[in-house]
Image (cartoon, rainbow, N blue to C red; front, side, top):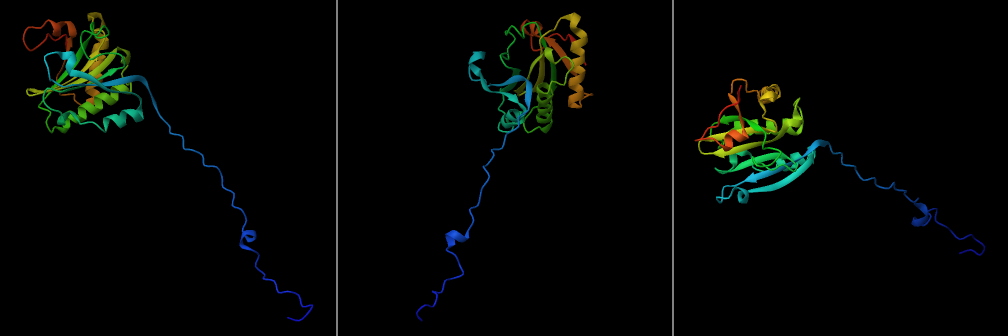
Length: 214
């Protein structure tokens, strides 16, 4: 090297100096939007294992949003796949699916009788539509509705909507609820009957007196 000749320097700067620091924006967590229901609802399962009714029924889960309802509904068997003697019961939170509950005792039920549920899409569709209509509070008199049941039996399947006021002077409201049920199901040609819980409790034989018929 010639004395006094400048030392050759690379045009490239050291890598650490040649790169600019990349600024990253902080990650914003996604906010899960939930759609609250007007009421909290509870699913009860009845399995006929003993002679004591209360020993056979148990709470499965409660929900108060649309998303939680679908999470539950999509992860349980449809009625058509339940064993004979089993029931599903969806009731407003705090109300037990039994006549003796004080919020049920003065009421009754709109009852629809269908063929055996085993592998029947009709039963499953009716049940889903009933539950969606209840939790969606689409009835003019939703405050009178306590819940719904589906009973799987060897003689057929029963779907019922329970109301809390079976008084004769409340007949207009009872009939309005019944007509809306038929509309929800698209079952204008199906026969539905309304039975009071008191008549059911004191009935002789398999059938209770019909207070209203549609």
